[in-house]
Image 1 (cartoon, each protein chain N blue to C red):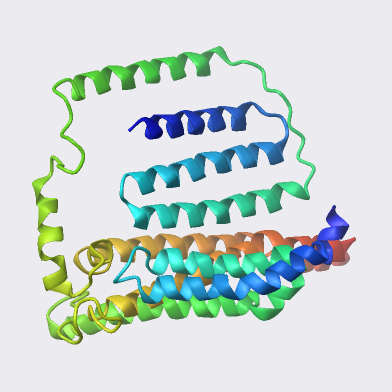
Image 2: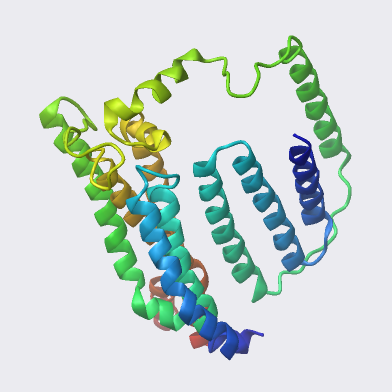
Length: 182
Length: 152
């Protein structure tokens, strides 16, 4: 399990670099380090479905961010230190640590033996019940297809929102007409 | 830098892209069609197909990929995927319930044609995700740039 901790350290270093570095392109590349490390961790934890989705969405997001930042001169200015924000960050971090200690005091279940025994149903019955040898797909598209429908609705709403907000062409024509009338 | 991106990247990048972009597209189709057998599925495969179009855009400039798959057709394909997914769910109502797997007994487990409606749902989701993501990419990045340049 030592490689997990190495990857976690790399991801934390990438996240800190992404926040601290001045150049936007370097920050985007550092964010990419976090996503690639996460996808390798998913592979090591034997979750190849999640690893494929993670790496593919990460590449798409990084390309989008690079293309969005490369052509625009977005000035980065150093922000002044805010004592209230720092105090709240320390407070919530402390609360999270205390809650974690209280929760995991008795020790966690070993990996592969979850607390929720209801999930044992799916590996035992999925192949006979749905005919799909990939149990993950049989869960997301058969047993829990309602969740997938909700997820598809979220993506649909996002696409409709982007297409509505970014329709700059129609808006400018109307504004031109109004300016001519005035 | 900006001017170079208009006509795409260098000749090396263009040649390599011409060789690999078809393989990336094919890999996306493989991930979708084998979603019920091996890791992967509609979501990941759809994003890979969208990435192959985005790859074309990066190498050859935005007009090429927008010419193959325009903004209007991304909207149509995305709506088709969503309607196909909903139609499969609603047909299940005839057989016992919402999202009932009405084709299930056909095919052997492990074969390409098996698992009932799950491969069809994978195809619907891939159409939706791929077209939606590429539509967002076109709208946010490529077309914005063209419009800002045509104004100047």
